[in-house]
Each structure stands twice: as C-alpha cells, then as structure tokens.
Image 1 (cartoon, rainbow, N blue to C red):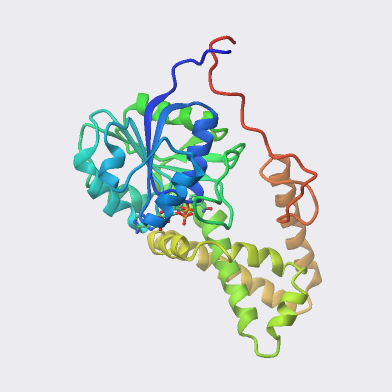
Image 2 (cartoon, helix red, strand yellow; image 1 turned 90 degrees about the horizontal axis):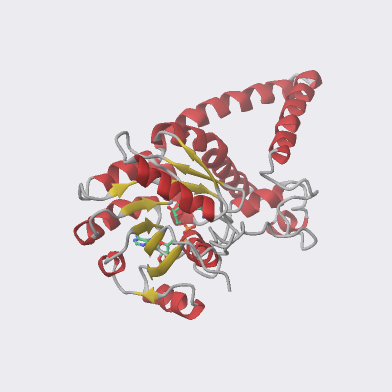
Length: 324
Ligand code: NAP
C-alpha cells in the first residue's frame, strides 16, 4: 500500500453542505488532502442527509461546534448569510486557522465576514467558478472542480503562506487557481456569470408570460436555444437573489452596456442591416471557439445535455504520494 504524504490540513470544517460544500467534501476526501472533515448545515434534514451520504467524518448541529479544532474552515452558504455565519464562528475559531468561503460575489463577503473574524486567523476568500443548476448535498460530486478556475481574493495584507496553502488545497481538488482583488472579481463575474443568469431568468419568464404562446408550446419547441436558457434559469433562487443584491453596482454597470448593445442590434434588425448582424454574430462565434479551445467547455454539439459517451474529467492523481 502506498503511504500518503502529510495532508495539507488536519481538520476541514464545512459550514453548509449543498452543491459546493458537499463537492468539496467529496473531492477533499478522494484526494486525501485533509485528515478529517466536519460538516454542518442549517436544517436538521440536510444534516441527516449528509450523515446518510457519508462524505463527512462528523456531522454537528451548530456552526460553532463545526469549527472547533479546525485548521481550515470553508463557509459554503449563500452570500447573504456569510456575515451572520462569520459572527457565529468568530469566537470559536482556532488560532492560526484559515477561514475561507465559496461565494459568487467577493466584495460584500470580504466586508461582511472580516468584521467578525479575530486577528489570529487567516481570512482568504475564494470562489470556485464551477457549478450546475442543482442544489443540496445529493447534487455534489468530487470532479466538480477539475479544470475549473478557483479565484482567491485575499485582503491586501494577507499572509502569503496561508494564501499559498489554500491555493494548494484547490489545486489538489483539480482546480486552476488565480488571485485577484475582490473588486476585479466582481466586475469580471458580473459579465461572465451574473448577467447571463439575469438574461436567462428574464427570457424564460417572458416566454412564460406571453399569453399567445401556451405553456405546452414553450416546452414542445424548446430545442431552439430556449432549452439552454431554462437550464440556467433553474439555478437556485436564494443563491441568485443574494448574488444580485450583493453585486449590485457591477451588475448594473454591465446591464447598462448590455442594454446599449441590445439597442444596436434592435436598430440593425429594424433597418434590415444584415451586414451588422453578420459581423456581430461572427465575432461571438469566435469567442465560443476560444472557450472550447482553452478547455472551458465541450466541443460536443448540443452542449448542456449529458453526453454519456464523453468521459467525466478525472480527478488529478491523489495528492502527494510519498512513493512517487
Ligand atoms: P446549495 O446547494 O443551495 O447549499 C446551500 C447550503 O447553505 C445548504 O447547506 C443550506 O442549508 C445552507 N444555507 C442556506 N441558507 C443559509 C443560511 N441563511 N444560513 C446558514 N446556512 C444556510 O448552494 P450552493 O450551490 O452549494 O451554493 C453555496 C455557495 O456557493 C453560495 O454562496 C454560492 O454563491 C456559491 N457558488 C455556487 C455555485 C453554483 O453554481 N451553485 C458556484 C460557485 C459558487 P440547508 O440545506 O439546511 O438549508
């Protein structure tokens, strides 16, 4: 049997065990990157389900109990709840522990959490840019972060060793790690993630409200692009409500630009300006090709549907075996 090198952390505490929290637990266990995992969740039903699924060494009832003796704490709850959770765990954190999160917005989380954390812990916020439209502990899987980006947004005077240790943790889970400021993160994600979700929520709602398009027709003919929007628009309402409230400024800025571009395309259609439309669509097609070229999506046609013939990206080889 191969002996394992020292894991990166002794005890990982996960506050929240939905899609992201449960995927971290599964991946961290598969990669043997921590010695033990303690999990808690808000509701007794979720805690019971986590115990049944068996991806944690201990399931506890309170956030305070979860962080006892943990040297890595990752808060995996909707961004609007991160401040309250930080206030609850603050007095119970072990000296020298690293505290992180997975929130899709970073500026607000940094502000809301830092306030409640003692000076003797390392606070390094993070955002794994990986997900699906499903929620809850059953939805997670160990390969979720493979070949995805995890963005760290450490505060200005963060301890570099702590930042590097957390980066190593995410790399062991298969992610590529990037570091940037929280402000820059929020601007970039506003256009790459938040705005597309807002558009999907809007278009699916609009189609649903059109009285002349009956519900059955919307469903029947949904192959024509609409189906992909419905997948995105099925994303968790609590999570996305919190994202838009927390990243208000950047989303409004990007929405302003988007509205200008929609107006330009509207004008081109009204004027029968096919050349403008063709130029625009050629540019966007090239962007899609670029995303496939850097491995951020499958080149398989009809993306968004499961392709059982395509292999699931494997987890990287188990973290740091001594015999190699
Ligand atoms: P999820 O599957 O809905 O799980 C959320 C977890 O947080 C559950 O364990 C839930 O507990 C708990 N929770 C909910 N509201 C809470 C509150 N007010 N106080 C304490 N705990 C609460 O969500 P998720 O997709 O894992 O998302 C978690 C975080 O990851 C969010 O901040 C989100 O922005 C970020 N994120 C999500 C994605 C994605 O695609 N889903 C991608 C990257 C990052 P109960 O089950 O007991 O209610």
